[in-house]
Image 1 (cartoon, helix red, strand yellow):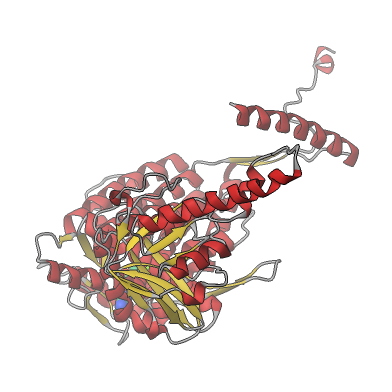
Image 2: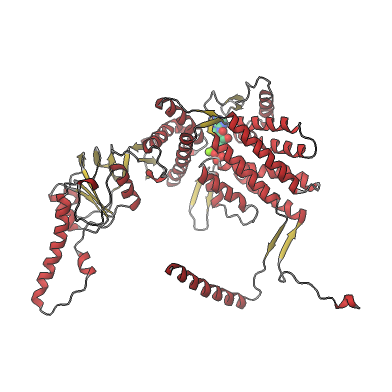
Length: 558
Ligand code: ADP
Ligand code: MG
């Protein structure tokens, strides 16, 4: 009787979807593996590209893991973690985004049979973490420093790293050309941390090889008024004035309210307005500047005024570009024309307005501070140039990384094979189940060379056997052997200059292991039910909005 009286315990709302235990874990692993399969084929120099079009009809062609992951509209909660690690790899090191996704998926794939057999995932996680620490230690040990070389030598080495990154991209055919360009650009900005000091400008049309590097700033000619044609378009060593003010007649009357009692006074107001603007323009001219740039509009009156005095002007310059001119030419942006001292003016060796393809460009080269560079990209279709820009971004990041912590490891799967071998050897010294788990981790690392082969159409089993044999050599001379992408055999990646910065690998191994462990540690997913009636939904929505809005305003006020 008493048992019948017992109340039923209701923990979650009706309709809540929960799945837990082994089944949930396996389903998460399957989802992650599926995502890995999507990006799998893009790895390496022979990787394929993905064409992604969204519901708005925009089309992107990309080989970049992070870009693809971003554009894929992944809804599975566990698989979303892979999107995050790809993003973090992209922002941390800039390259190795496909690698990180692939590794995470492979770690989980290897873990799957154990999970099915009832191994507790905490055991797997512990072993994976140990394996990852060992692997990273090994990468650091195997990394070769390129420090202490002469500038020319170092440039050559950096170009090799850039070329390896670019070889898997659409512009891989011209990798030497672009690698040199990227290295020059990075060297130009020195050890400044601001990535936006390297500008990339895209001009559709022309040939890839028409792309060029400006050791300074270049931007598209801004909108200009009548009188612009009469301005000179080239200066040697001009003084450059950078402004953040509007040089237009109308601005004055819009900024003030004036009450007149006598109509005859009107003329004096008009005169005053003209005087104000002429005064401003005079001050600009007196400063000795030959090039005047402003973030705001420079109107027709000012344009004509400057033209009469052989001064070049450009209004509505994008903030980013103006900042880069300031960084390169050494000036500071003024918000008033009063008291323009010589120190705030910048300068450069040559200023020029030039035709590039169908566009006119303002180009400032030979800048004294030299801390900026601009790559002007040319090429056929829009999608092509955009992918080229993403590829260059990867290469720039890699070179900057290599400049900072200048150690490299052999690519083409060589380093992965070597760590794999090391972990296998290490696992033999461990007693217990952990041996199996570390062995699986080691096996998962082989996915990189295997996929490089698969994507190039080589016989992966054959190549991997050769690689295993090379890496197993006692003398250690086979340690840098990786997949030879040209012949389908194996080759010394170091000798072939297939180099990657060590930090790419370290970060990839770290992030992929963390992601795998995170997914292994989840044993239950709870999905809250939607509100039952549409009415209830709307009411809840309105309430949410009301409250949210209030909070938002409160935040802004603070
Ligand atoms: P990710 O997004 O991970 O950088 P990529 O498509 O750029 O992926 O491919 C990187 C992989 O390709 C690395 O493992 C690298 O070592 C390898 N790789 C790059 N160039 C070559 C080459 N010339 N020969 C063999 N492997 C290469
Ligand atoms: Mg890459």
